[in-house]
Length: 278
Ligand code: NAP
Image (cartoon, rainbow, N blue to C red):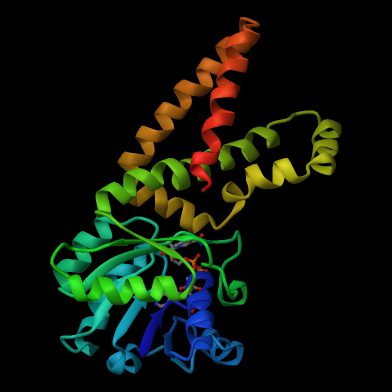
């Protein structure tokens, strides 16, 4: 199958590496000429160009640009498509994208492979990034044949497909993806608020796996974090407000030296955590 990928960065590049290794023909498009050259050298794409017309033969095209560029990219892509072409994206927010894109192209199906690293760009692309990860598919209802093709692609990457509405996706990822980015970045800010230089320097030396885990998503791609907030603002604000209430509750318990209730909360959460990590 000829598969087009637009935006050859971490996600687009990693998709290209795995799909090309399976024997699919990958046609890549990116903004910079140098990225297109690297993509071919790295085995991300068979051919790559800055010109969208290279994609006219593709059966399925996956837009992997930053969130804010997905709709404008589809607008420019439409004249190069034939009526059968399926177009998808990988944007971390779905409702505004699926609404706008399905008006531009009836064969548009939203997608979100839920894997990533703190890196960005073509040189961050890696094989097997999506293995074991969820791949959420958010179609407009009627587009059944396209869903199967996208599901097959997700499964071929070793990912687990989930099908749901864009709205349900956005509410769910606000909890487990967008809220953690904001709390994790606040954690880094809070540590930087230490006014005693000697303490801050020692803390930086002592930081180990716990800090690495809890700061990873907040110390990642700033453009991506900003766009999550911009495009999923309502659901994210709701999650942040509930988070703040929980933080206030913990502050109160510690102020009141209420260790029993604090331990009770920690016990409940220790038991609940594995349900989020299956
Ligand atoms: P990234 O590493 O920065 O890659 C995006 C690439 O798109 C850039 O390297 C850039 O390549 C290219 N690009 C930018 N504007 C373009 C345009 N107008 N036309 C064509 N190419 C363009 O970012 P990413 O992390 O892969 O994120 C891409 C998408 O994946 C986003 O929509 C994001 O929401 C989604 N996503 C990200 C993650 C994650 O954890 N990172 C996870 C799941 C989904 P050049 O400028 O080098 O050509």
